[in-house]
Length: 296
Image (cartoon, helix red, strand yellow):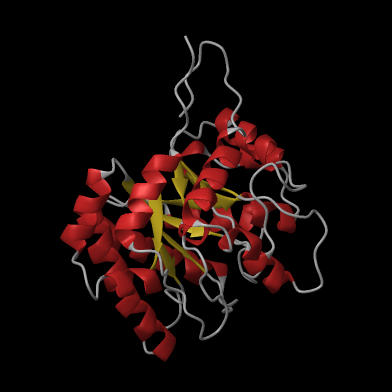
């Protein structure tokens, strides 16, 4: 008897199409939300993700209830809502006020759409002590828990000057000790940080909350930010060994859905159906069935 296929979600930037990345760019998708749901289901995805700017744009013409119905009509989950920055800076700071307003939007959406998680982190490299970040993460998780069952996942990355190792990431989530708080592991970020697949074994299963698959070059391009936004590869089409991260996460007890997040200028040029089909198929083949054991 063959094992069931893994639950694979299309993250926002994989499915958004020809958006404009960078400061002041158009981050919302020109693909209609209904079309995204229908094409994602046709390709094989079990869920999709939403970026805050795109969510705001969709809500101009549709309600959260209508969005939930479109997801349900296509058998899809809202897997991810992102992205919350500056949630750990002082409450009187203008950046924190803007972050709190976005937090409200994401919490309302998570409750209405039944999101698996809200993703947070430090995209802009805002400095802050680990202890303060852990304390604020605990408060954020408590705030989320009062309104929705969604997890809160901290995504650490090369651009985060505070949390850029497994040990520092664990300091945040273990320091917060929140039942709904954990880590988001993006294989592209792990590769660029020099974090090997075996290193995932140091993360207790309760904190291994979200796995995101993306491939790319082992060596950095001259502009790492541009590489991150425009030059990632579909899983298996780069040099980072995505299948090894998958195997390590499975061995470490990860049983949740899997996301594919590929920010690629080339992928964004494709027609929607081909884009979604290629993204799903490239991700699905990273999973190697184990006889007698069902995969997540």
